[in-house]
Image (cartoon, rainbow, N blue to C red):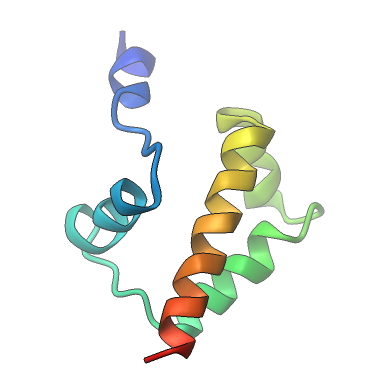
Amino acid sequence: MEDENLMSFVPNTYDEWKHCITVKCEIPLTQRYVAERLAALNDQADFHTQKFIGRWGSKHHARTVAWFEQAAKELASQ
């Protein structure tokens, strides 16, 4: 049951993801944070990245990388 509840909170769009990060988790999307997360998520040898892919799958991993890349572009244009 817990997994089902977690799955209902998995973001499906950039806006949902951004809301989760910035509002629910209260993590500011700074250039440094975004760059660090992208570096980790793009490192297939990173333990946490392996756990993320194992838990959420490669498609969600790819979406998450794309969302961090979109955030990086937004930050660069500010």
